[in-house]
Image (cartoon, rainbow, N blue to C red; front, side):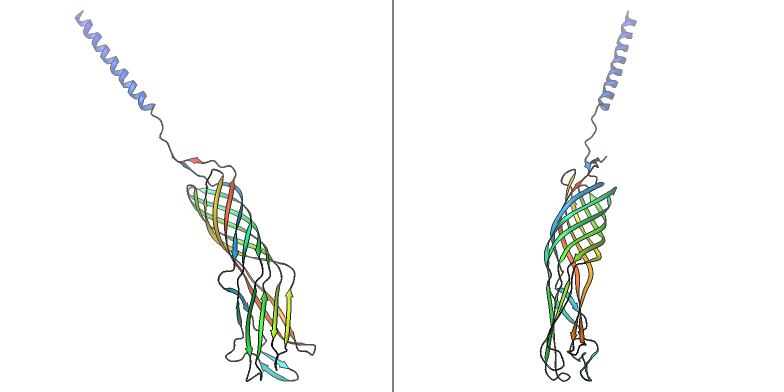
Length: 294
């Protein structure tokens, strides 16, 4: 009997130890998984709208070409050299313009780890009215007996619309995307008008002479800039973007008659088609769930 009692106690202790170990192991396995933060995925198509402003940077506006050829032959045979020592043969005008712009954009993003690559196209209407740029120069003794002032006025026309086709590359910090962008740009401009006013005097025909490069012209250029985009909801984001865009120069030439059926001289002007623009943009992104970060 004593032997049976000892065996029963030992068996009870062994079974109790096994049960305790099993319960402890079950408790470890039943421990809940830790909570992980979610990472925003920028991949996918998106569409959106934008509004902002555009302006010519600084005071730059127009760079007038040579007012005359190297010399002019006045009737009947008097040569007058127009590059006069101490007087500029090139004039620089200044002026500025600014206006409201607004439109829409469409694009696609690919995200690789924290890097985001994309393409985007946008089109905007503008309120950029033409500006008047002017500069003057004075001819006088000894080559011209009477001082004559000549004024050149340039109306740079109106910008009707602009569009761009760009690539994008950025760095994502979860729901914030820092990006750079650049590519081709195209715009439609109304005609450029140049007016030359010669004061009365010997050696230059007095009067006002005007030419207009009428109609609208479409010009291609380039654009580059960058921005910051914030995903404030799973499908929605808000961005601020700045870009510099250059469409080259637009010129016009005025022919000044000599009063005898010929041309006394020509005046050629070139005005810059360069813009800075800043826009606020909102985008809606299709598909692409927020992914878990482990």
